[in-house]
Length: 460
Image 1 (tube, rainbow, N blue to C red):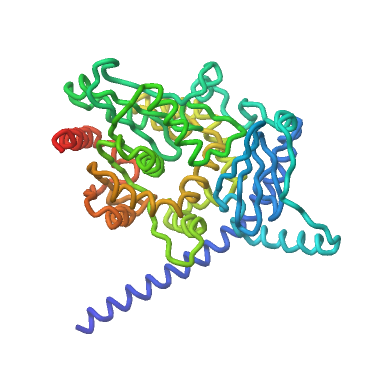
Image 2 (cartoon, helix red, strand yellow):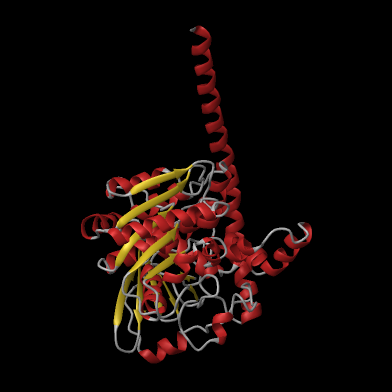
């Protein structure tokens, strides 16, 4: 008994020591990263001005400043942000995530303190009231071309050679005689090849003859448009999917299969078209219930990106989420040069492995990835409860949820959180699988599971 008690005490002490060490090392590392990001802000301003003869404003700007970009004016005041979208005929307000502006760091807080003191000394005030006509808006609108730090290859910029202002959609199956339609929505830092290279070849002949499979590259990713002036908000993502898939392919009723961030887009579409959804399959949905009194967007950001060096996935998420300029550097090194990394991978492995996942991870711009993360994952935190309640109460379709037992990006608890909101939802946890291998590596088994779900919807 004493040995068992001593063992428990030892485990508790080691766990506590590990937590203290993790916190201490994390504090030191992220203090350094705060400073590095602060320096990179000025470095990129100089390089941007040198190469492009201009620099775009970044989110290092202080509170009560307005940033004009394209047709959008971003206004940030005390952790509340609005996007003012101006056209010649209408003025539209739209929520954006305050995490774009409010990402507290030691350097940022020190800089803010100094600037506030200077403003008080000058006794200046800033107003967030604008009077701008359509002519000025046209002058301020940015060019829809890649920036110097973005990739200029044909895959990443295939949309620039097309006259259509729509998303890229990979469609397979009968064009005119399809009995069912299925919409596939990928997650963040991914593309439609996540589905087309895994599931599509493994569906049965019956499915291929009767179902029309529609895998979309969401706005800003894969082969879809990546405009530099967009903010990649929920409205923009959903409207482009409706325009490019549902309207273009005349889809009336359909199944949805979505992964990670794509689950949020799937729920938003389901809420807008409750009578059209035949089944809803969600993989690793990022749903964290927000405690009462907590700022929703900030809570979600800290859950997904907790500013810790361990586990490794939390460290990577923290860098991508908290540091605008460090993450831009990552895109410059990896995404801009993805063809080089594909070549290196093929050379090292002697072309023995397929590199489609590199296209998944690399075919996006920093602007699209940065804004999509903050405006979709963080910015929708206050909306997901109502979306799930609508699915529960107004949709009668089957809801199936799959999650990898070893998922370090989105914890398994998120799927059970969804089930608590939608009691009829069925949750399946696949052991020894993570955020990616929930599909990749078990595509044949998952294809069969999807076919069963779609078949059951016919009987309902």
